[in-house]
Length: 217
Ligand code: BG6
Ligand code: MG
Image (cartoon, rainbow, N blue to C red; front, side):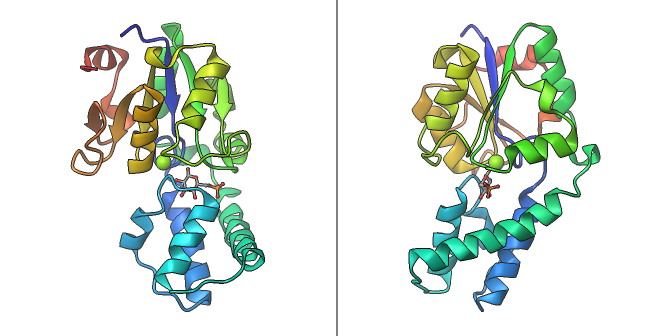
């Protein structure tokens, strides 16, 4: 493989926003008297806001109409935005900026591929907007991972073929989206969970360009 582009998921790969998503979903679940645990939260990783609402309501065996679901999603997002508005550059996960800068110095293009509509706010808060040549996020794509749309859009924005790109993902749905896009994938997390990735590491700090070039695709 000739590596020309690296596409990063945002939540759980570059920043640890999963804890804020959990706190906001938990607050909504408590308000609706739905039992919601850290374990249940795993199912929401990488999943779009409206699909997450469906999962939570299913846990509570509730079937409200669409208007009500949109109200719940807006409420959760209001609480979530309160958390992320307070984020600082300290919340960038270890090794992320070092790896991205190394890739860019080597002429490799970098992009974000995230389901989140809050991507621009998070990038601004932690001060890393300038590290990416393109941002494909929930504001420009509509099909949720495991659909490959977000990664294909990122590659298109970079002007690259999918087979020249590596995706970095922490969610099962995200790894599957990379596979569906015909891209190589580095899983961030546990090999048992992200078994479809080409390789799995605990975090970006384990990686260098040299190590990336050694991955068997
Ligand atoms: C993904 C997160 O990146 O974005 C999900 O892993 C989240 O947990 C999804 O639901 C949508 O995010 P947002 O910020 O648009 O609600
Ligand atoms: Mg993620």
